[in-house]
Length: 295
Image 1 (cartoon, rainbow, N blue to C red):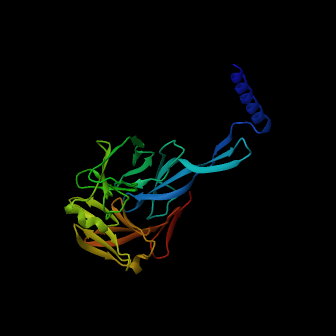
Image 2: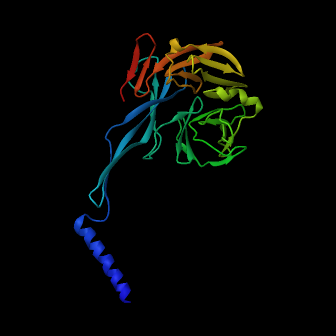
C-alpha cells in the first residue's frame, strides 16, 4: 500500500510541475489560406482544352509543452478547372471542387477524361463533369517480390490499365510493371513476358486501339523515339524540342509531352501543339505568343 501511495505522489508532482512550467499538452493552431494557389496543369482533353488543378494551402503551428515550436504547411480542398489554351479567355470554362480532404492535390491523367491520385493506399478517380470517388485497392505480386511506387497509369489493350513507376528493365526479383483492374479493385505487380520485353527501354508506354506505343529518350543524343509495336515511327530531335539531361518524355492522355511541349501523333507524324508551364497556367505557341491565366 505504501508503495502505491509513493507512486501516486510522484505522478501528482510530475503533473504539477508540468502545469507550473508550460503545460503538458501541445498547443496547435490550424488555419486555411483565404485564396487558392499551387496551380498546375494536370492534362489535356482535346486540341484546345487543358485541365488545371489548384488547392487551398493550410498552415499548422504547434507550440510544444517544453517550449518548442514547429510549423507545417500543405494543401487540400483541391479543385479542377478547364481552360482554353488556344484562345485567350477571361478564365476557366468550367471548375468544380473535388474533395474536402486536407492533404493531397497532385492529380494525374489516366485517360482522355479520367484523372487519378493516391489517397493513402487507395486511389481517387475523377472524370470530367462528375465527382471524385475513392476505390479501396488490394495488391498482390505475380512472379516478382520487389514492388515499386506507382506514379503513372496508362491504358492497356484489354480494358485494364498498366501502372508504372519502377524500371521496366529491372532485373532479378524486381517487379517491372503492374496491372490495375478498377472493376476488380486490384493491382497486380508483374514482370514482362516475352512478347512485351521490347518495352524495357521505354520511358513511357500505353495502348492505343490494338497497338502498343512507346516513348524512349536516348540518354546520349537526347533525341526521343516514338515506337509502335517495336517499330520506330518518328524521331523527335533534341534541338527542336530542347531536350537534355533533365528531360522528361511521357504520354498525357491522348497526347505526347516532351519536356513541357505538348505534341500530337497523327498521319505518321508528331507535331507540336503548345508549350506549357510547370507551375501556373501559361501556354505558348513557340513563336513568342502566350496565353496566361491568373489563378
